[in-house]
Length: 124
Image (cartoon, rainbow, N blue to C red; front, side, top):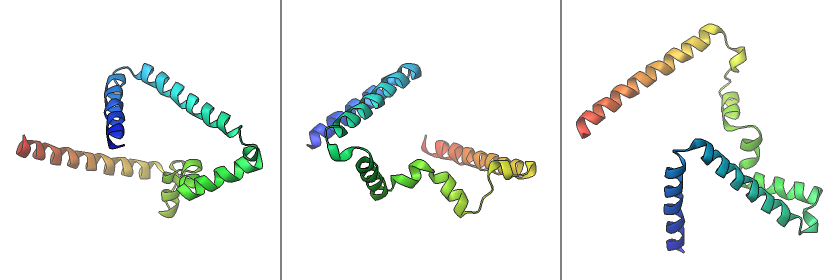
């Protein structure tokens, strides 16, 4: 089993590296794969009468709640975290607040670049 997983892991790496040079082709291949996957899920679900309508809704909701995907998929982690931190939405922020955040981010990036340069000098 481990050798099969290792084979597909290496195959994925090779395909990803090759396709990353052609983003449009990569997007098309990935899109086709996603559509075919969900088509297969849909057609398989049609084989089970209990998975029509309400049964499908309840089972899907249960699976997403159990795996923790329900809230993060429909709302998103960043929205939840910003609500917990009581952060304002971008449209509610003043121009000064947005500029202040940008300056802070620029400062952090500058510091990280400096740290990266020092590490490169010591390691390389």
